[in-house]
Length: 143
Image (cartoon, rainbow, N blue to C red; front, side, top):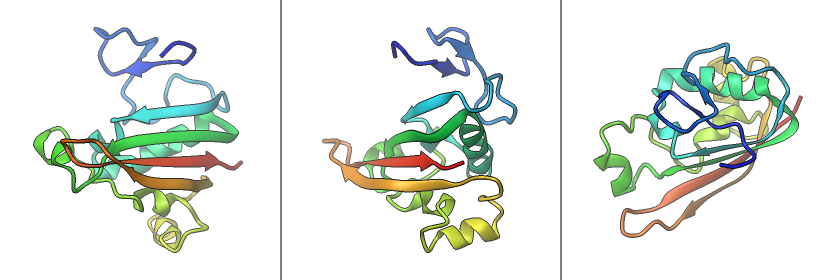
């Protein structure tokens, strides 16, 4: 996307940077992004790597930054037909990262909220015929 810093794990893409977003210590400075867009990526993150990814997103974002996530809903045919999809996403998945939400207590107990403060601004299903719904989640960073 023009005007964004695009990354990919493959150097054969047209991305600006090549890195594995599932490993910590991205080659990106702290507090630089105002907007992060994750379109059809988070469903490829193994469950145990999600806190690592979210920690790096938090680190690289400025206070007030917005994170837009779009992924196939866990009930979607699109989620189940792609063998690389490993993290089922619902409208409540990222509530674990929001201490304002009841599920945020679980995120705190698991240590997912250590040093992070995300707020879920919205989370909704969006149509994606014929494959089934996607889910769109919007988070905000508080530092």
